[in-house]
Image (cartoon, rainbow, N blue to C red; front, side, top):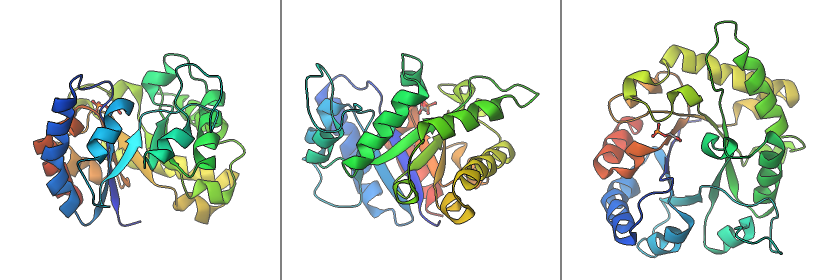
Length: 253
Ligand code: PGA
């Protein structure tokens, strides 16, 4: 897998549409030029159509930060369906981010959302990650369960649409020094592929992109690339055009 993903999750930021436009305009030219990376911008639902209107190229893709588990429409007050996202040209959707799992989402809910998203042609970016890093390695069991239950019932073809974002909770929202070590990251990538290979087959498993997220920015991204991941899901640094430009430079080397 040669192309590296840079997924920028803007979370519930910024409030003002103007600020969103400024960030996007600051990112768009560098992003459009980057050859060896795939950039996916995930702003708030409300800002997606506005930002899409500022860009007619194909290089930058748009993602949502969540979707509902009923795929098309119905009496579900306040929800956004995968079909609605597809209607707006959204191609990716983050599902099971730890900040949502923390609110209420179980692996079962994540699984229903993943299936709904795939049924509407979206590519789910499925987040997994353990809360703590215990020395006995119990977190491997947690991760296995998250993978197996969140992706339950998917066939090999469905898996070609999936991106896995490994985001250990202890590394999110910290300083760049507190991100994972590249060696540990490499081990986690091997483990994630191993779980897929046991549930499907080696070839299918190795084709699934595994990204890392948690306190990534331009000062640690070069080091983290050595963890052999297929890209990064970034929070704070992904809303800073200069940071994005530096991170893309690193990914394009
Ligand atoms: P961070 O967020 O890059 O600000 O740590 C990552 C995430 O929550 O996906």
